[in-house]
Image 1 (tube, one colour):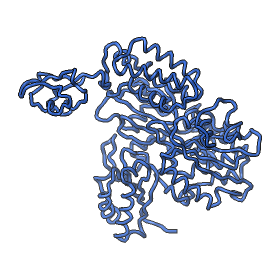
Image 2 (cartoon, rainbow, N blue to C red):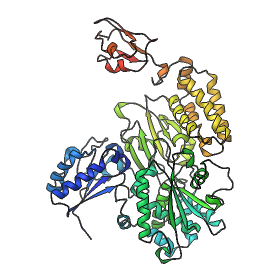
Image 3 (cartoon, rainbow, N blue to C red):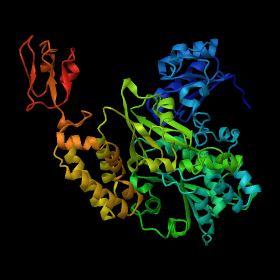
Image 4 (spheres, one colour):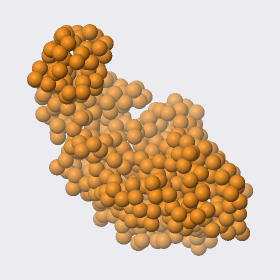
Length: 599
């Protein structure tokens, strides 16, 4: 076994890869070899570290020095100073948003972004090489599968998952152990295990990061589930837009087969299990379990009525147990550490941790995993670092297109399944988008509803027609053509769609509208009655004006105006003709005297 004095861990997730981490890794390997360090220093491509805002990220162990926003040109200095001379390159060290410190001696647990987190589903992301099964094995990989197959009955495995309190992390929150129990009880010699990796919420990248950083955790959990319910075959349905995740899944499945961890007689037992990948074409509705299974079968991806539920009649009309990626990522740890260990975290009805993709108007954009019950305020301000540029927080949208927007007065809401629903939103799969004072809540509702309209499969009338009628009303409002009666129409349509749509996509589609009406009704009223967008966002309602007291008559604004809407002589106050103004904002950006405002 090779032993190295230092390891250079470089993020190989999608975000850092798009910022050049592959070239950074190549440069590290080249410079390490040139300096004769290739027998002493090992470069490892890992999955996502979580702090995407600081990428590309490089961490050097054993010191644990955290380098952020690394560029290819920085590699030479890191090699010559840190790896050769033992002197961390201070100006490249991550600058903590909370303390504004750049301290090379700080461990990850001391950085504000990480200190409030508890990583279970993400335990190996940013730690191991996801394309090397030996590294997964070194971190107790496949020990849970061995334990289940050699020392636990099927019933005991299911009971352990039940006792843990693990609930589905895909949005529904259904007890995982109960789903396994139903599938196990269904008669028949052929059953299937399926994994929903068709993550499609705007701003969500939790499942993708797990597959990119720790694919074997999902494979191991699916094999455990297969043993528990009596299945010998599994399918992972992953969207084709995740090429890195798909590649690493293919590598992981091949390695597991080579090691005898998938295939016939696993660990010398009578249990045999294999896994196949099926690529989705990006239809959001295929995140719904029955639509997903139809797509795997090669049919049009659209929901079908339930019952019968998939645990009775699912994939290929056989009993099928489906969980999402994050749910599976918890399973091996529950089997290894016990149900009581997992249940000791979280709240009474929401056990364990939850992964969130934190995005929008937030300093620390990235992936976080916190114990259930952590407040929105802790996630947004302590972990997320607050709102950039001194702007004021306005709302946080949780649950993707199916969720709702929660205002500042609800920032102390504990994040779990029941509290978020009570507040007017939902957990969803884990998207969390932060908005500031510049966001128009009417337009935010319109954005998410437009997404749902585009993604509707069109099978049921409430979703196909009802959401489109709601979108037409919202479009009128943001264009300044709304009427006060439109608010009542929106609420009536929303309640009808929620009560009658066929699947979860349609039933939850009105949530962004209902939550913004509940907490930000004044913005709807301002758009309709006053023809004003309080956030100065909706273009049709904007008006640019020049303050004659501040205008110096420099003509800079007039020179950049594409509509020739600005009139005035040199050294005299200018005016904007509202009939000609294109509302592009070029004049406001160009003015050096702050004379132009947006109203």
